[in-house]
Image 1: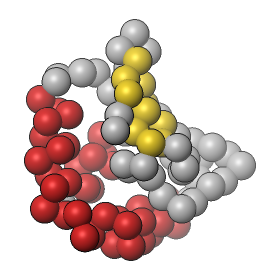
Image 2 (image 1 turned 45 degrees about the vertical axis):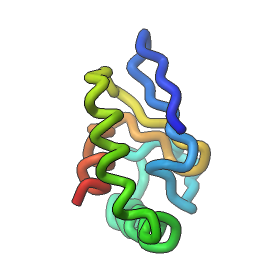
Image 3 (image 1 turned 90 degrees about the vertical axis):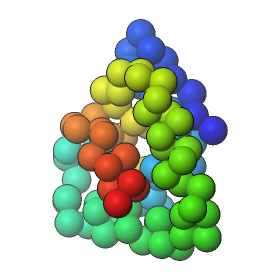
Length: 93
């Protein structure tokens, strides 16, 4: 489930694109990048791997809406404000 605020180009993605990672610095461009991407991989491997065949089609549906995305805010993780679509690209890989 995702919710968008198109006026601000924010995608609230709940569990999609999340990680079991938090940091007082809050934003993806403020945290250690190596640790962040390790947490992204760990989350995908542990939570989403059983659903991998469903992930790509769902992402393509969301991308098909052609909505601007300047920020991805998940229910648990840092907020992706610097190049947020890099996370989407990682999921597609």
